[in-house]
Image 1: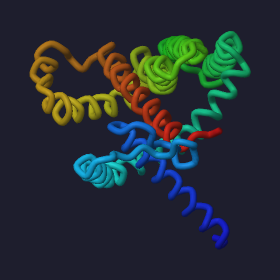
Image 2: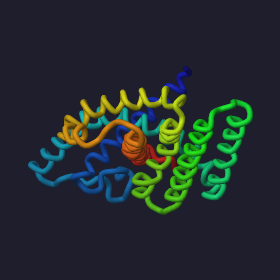
Image 3: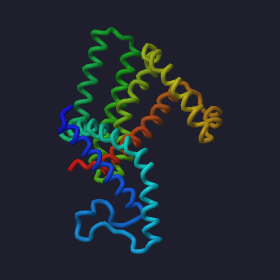
Image 4: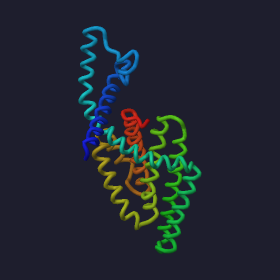
Length: 247
């Protein structure tokens, strides 16, 4: 690595941390973020007590920033990946995404039917998976075009993750061959979530008493995973946009 690149990386990290700390300060105090080069400058208290509290809040933010900054970097990585997909989807539009998905899954169905010699259940599984993937992808693109970061995080990211995660599980409901691979993994993950997450929030006993991990329940499980996972990804990308704007 060259010296110039090292300085560039260090300089970028310093800018990120400074902006993140200013954002933390602005949670309580006005005119903190990016105010150094403005006419009014950064706001500071005009009393000793106020300045002491100001400095205390600044110090309290240091460990918070240490915990949050790795998430910012991960969000920047996710942003790079999602923007590549988003730019392609934007150029295609909802109709283009639907048509592309139909063509791609149609070719896979044709290949499975005429070249892979799958049983009827296998073809049905691929058709069902293609429907879920196409619908989820179309909804992701459609909601992405609705203005507002909140709508994007609330709807677009979950639909996008669903388009990736849910089709294999839907296919497993129709094909024993697919189910032999997907269902054990799904069941293992469901057990981990049940005993480590749901029990922690007090919902484990209710779920064990009212739901069985069979059939369509696996699709519901993965839908329940893909939606909050989409929210997490969208939140991390939003955090990266806040700390490290692309413009």
